[in-house]
Image (cartoon, rainbow over all chains, first blue to last red; front, side, top):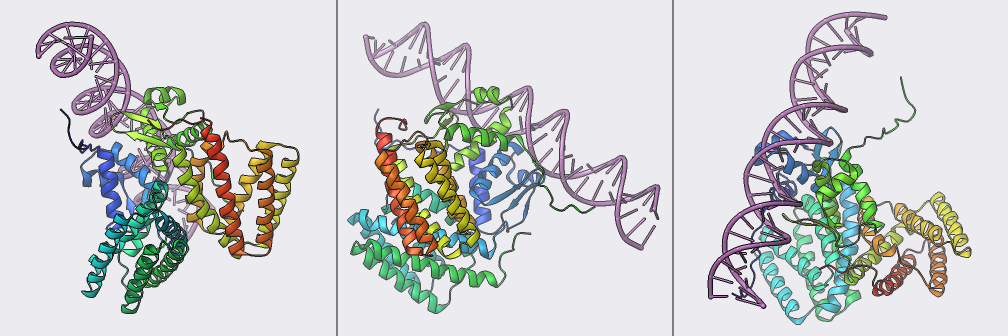
Amino acid sequence: MTVTATSPIRRLTLHDEVVARLRELIVRGELRPNERLGERELCERFEISRTPLREALKVLAAEGLVELLPHRGARVAGLTAGDVQHMFEVMASLEALSGELAATRITAEELAEIDALHAAMVDAYRERDLPRYFAHNQAIHERIILAGRNPVLREVYQGLNGRMRRARYAANMSEDRWLAAVREHEAMLAALHARDAAGLAAILRDHLHKKCEVVLAHLADGDLAAPS
Amino acid sequence: MTVTATSPIRRLTLHDEVVARLRELIVRGELRPNERLGERELCERFEISRTPLREALKVLAAEGLVELLPHRGARVAGLTAGDVQHMFEVMASLEALSGELAATRITAEELAEIDALHAAMVDAYRERDLPRYFAHNQAIHERIILAGRNPVLREVYQGLNGRMRRARYAANMSEDRWLAAVREHEAMLAALHARDAAGLAAILRDHLHKKCEVVLAHLADGDLAAPS
DNA sequence: AGCTTGCATATTGCATGCAATATGCGGTTT
DNA sequence: AAACCGCATATTGCATGCAATATGCAAGCT
């Protein structure tokens, strides 16, 4: 028999599941930077044996979320203000590239979808619903990346974004900055509609630089520990 | 007793060693794209047990050099012309960023070192010594990255570069293109000396785009297999 | 004949056991 | 009293064994 859409059955292996769970714990800050990750402890927590756990730790180390000290175990990777600054520098370039690509490659449908997300985001802003605002915000940037049609860019972006979200998670915004951010997003959409690649790239680059300042200011208040 | 410089003793764990060896085999093309990586086979080759090998494969998969098919083993990641194009798009942005940063942050010593490498590279070009040319070429780009003083940029660059070197490895250059590349390098140095961030960024971006075309042309001759 | 079905084999995924290395503490020495 | 040394403990790294899943082939069915 022919099936309309071959549903890719949930093929779950333990280590993949553990990678996802641990990544979430780290990104959400429940496992704090520099916190020690004992194998025994985590094995009991997830009720698995050491083999899949160790494989998961290796993967997260390759992603930069975990540091592996030979013969001395694993720790959540530290996150200094310098690290954040460096990540934002790279992210700004990646976002600028995604803007260039999206401006030339985006379809009308994708553009309409982003318009809708933008409207929803502005709505969340009006209601001062920060979590919803963030979610839509992230979704918009994600769609711009997708519209660029470059899977490698997407991979690299996702990797860095995962590491940065740790810092952004607790980061609040001033009322002024929030309004400015919304305005910048409006400029983005205008550039996208105009297919203005260079303009969109510039806006995104600038947008990221400002976001960086906000996060750094918040970090200075002593939210995240520096590496030993 | 006090030691002048705490020599970081070579602490080698098997899986790290295996990661390095496998990565080299894949990058150098001895393990071809889409080639199957049986655990038994590799265990015998390296004379180790399956545990460290599996950990190594997970790491390489996170790096994008290996594909893991659940319950069906591992294969060397495929490398289509599209993949190469996408990687070059990102690399061009990263190189441009590295140029911007380097132009503003490089020290006189670093600049002198790059000058020396450039001279050596030109020397290799005059003798048509391609391997030596490539080595110096890579070293120069590496130094520019280092001069940018952004470890995150360096990480991301290294990761992508590892994946691209697979394609570049066999790529030859036409006489014309080779000369043009040398001239572009001279322009780079001029921009670096002038601390011209925007100019260097533009040169590097353009340089990468052209390199991409060369590699793609070579790839079209059917060097690397496409993914299934 | 082509397709499906069932079993035998091979390979992967996970758990556990053993050896090697690091950590912490008590005793000893200066 | 402070520092050093050595041993006991805990943790990590690697090897191996068992269960689960995929692959290949041959027999049976339509």
